[in-house]
Length: 330
Ligand SMILES: NC(=O)c1ccc[n+]([C@@H]2O[C@H](COP(=O)([O-])OP(=O)(O)OC[C@H]3O[C@@H](n4cnc5c(N)ncnc54)[C@H](O)[C@@H]3O)[C@@H](O)[C@H]2O)c1
Image (cartoon, rainbow, N blue to C red; front, top):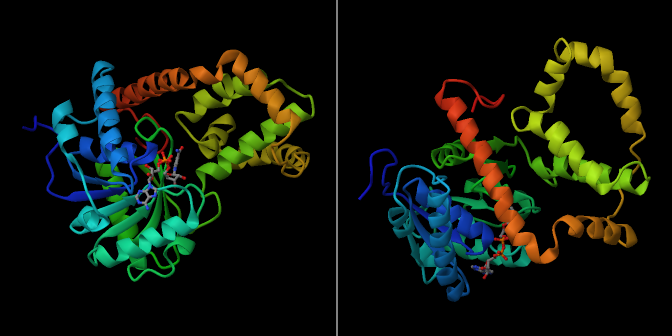
């Protein structure tokens, strides 16, 4: 029985691969009332995934962080196990692929999915690194294909990148965008594909510069972390770099007039990309394990989730009070 609020929807979503990301997608769609079919090449993984999803739902309820208004058992019951790819995808409006990051494996899978889907079914890949053109070039339904790249952990970080192949239709991009909004995610629509998409390009720029700064002896590992968590991070939780620049001077034009030369000069001193390997990697890890030992990573992930959930709650409350919580109007 559904409580008022979140509707129970008739549309079915197919999730292929029931690891960490497949479980997150299954939960996100179920919490928005969709029927979810979960398939894995190893059926035991689906059973394990269902157990973990139930545990996560119970944890979210305890922490008052459930999405939507459907009770735990109703959300859990929306997710069913599919025994074959065909059964998983055949009446689905949307397929989300979440198998290992292996090109050959994904190509084989999409060839199989292509045979069993309807002409209107959208296929999204969770890939972190592969271009949608490379994944879909041989598919009959390639116009319905895109990368739908979540941010980890997807339940707590709402950004999801929608990356088109050159042949993905605007209609498919639009429908996927609406679907992501319907499940409470924040779609970021790319106009064309590029290696690393957008989020990872930004993330790699930051981690790459931090690595160079530590290597040059400018700052400690802890100092780098603190610069983000106490400096750039609090602002970036509510607004991006362009909006920050706009506010940090009298508009973006004035920011560029004032700081453009300095920014250009500093950027020129960044140096080329460095491969993170060898002794320095070990040194950085040694610093990090002093605070979070390797056997406490899971505990610390839960710590991170609670904090991200609290931030999401604040943003939701601000939005309910009619105040925009972020510069994108959410
Ligand atoms: N973990 C992250 O932080 C993260 C973030 C964003 C995107 N991604 C991407 O999401 C995808 C899945 O990552 P993950 O971390 O969930 O991996 P995972 O290793 O946790 O799970 C992968 C699952 O896929 C299943 N699988 C393998 N081959 C299959 C097949 N042919 N058919 C059906 N199931 C199959 C495996 O049995 C396993 O259960 C990858 O492409 C990854 O790059 C991961």
